[in-house]
Image (cartoon, rainbow, N blue to C red):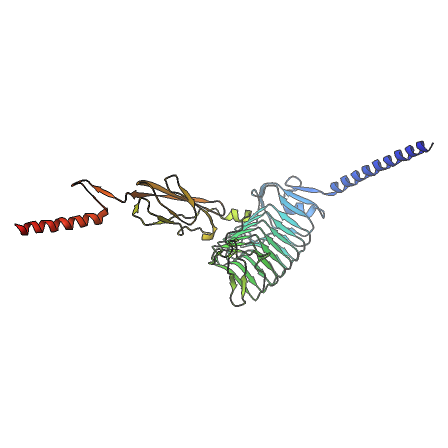
Length: 422
């Protein structure tokens, strides 16, 4: 009887467990089903109409096409293109393509062009802009009077009058892994903002400034690549951290060296602002490699070399020097020098020495690679001659051109003496 009762209780317990699992699965399905996806142009022809009709928490998906719109987003939704390169929002040269006002709003995977401002986030909290290309606008991405927002993996270029990415009067903004180039005023700027993190960005070819900071303190700026800007960085009335965990930024105009411990960090600081004493204590010797950098650095480095001496004899030491090589990102961005001396010997390094064991003509080839993987090479034919030149006329072996001169003088003296004896 006791065994029967135990068996009965066990069966009841198993049934209850099964019911609980079934109820849990139904609850999960119910939660998933609450997410509503609105499609453009399938459900609504315009992005604005889709946003207006969406409920809080909905996701708006936009298929490829050119959308001539100015979109106001003032509710908690996620808006993304299904193919970022081909989902284009064109602002017609005025206004903001996207105006974000609210909390928990997320915009991703668009191409935005021809607007006064690409994306304007104002008075918002916990919002994000990611994987979006902004081009041919007066201003790129602007964050104003906002908190805890993220600007991630965007490409912003050619803001004709203003800046690429700026945070104004904002707090705790993360600006990470963006490529920002060819903007007029600055690439990345902070004005009256604090506790922001600017990291992993590539800032290049901006007309006035690469990084511009004014009246903004307690921010952390590190792992950024800054090159080919009018002025790489300016920071006024601000005090910030220019490194994190003993790693700073890559500055193309840094002239320091890394001879102390060869750890990839410059031995001396990079001066950010002399007036306030701000400096990057741990400047990177080479660019910080990420997708943002690889997107910008597509140019091959320029390659050339010299050799000393140029008149080369067998077994004579020859010094090859590639220090004249350069890269638009800076000389330190060249990470590899590969030499082929044409006699099956190879070497690596900016300066190398080599000697030839046999006379002949040899093709010396130098191939260099920059941090982004771009390569370039050049070749030069060098002539190596024997240290002894044979003169078989008269059965004598003379050493070099100086030997010929000595023998000529001796013959002349012998000839004069012969004439006098007659």
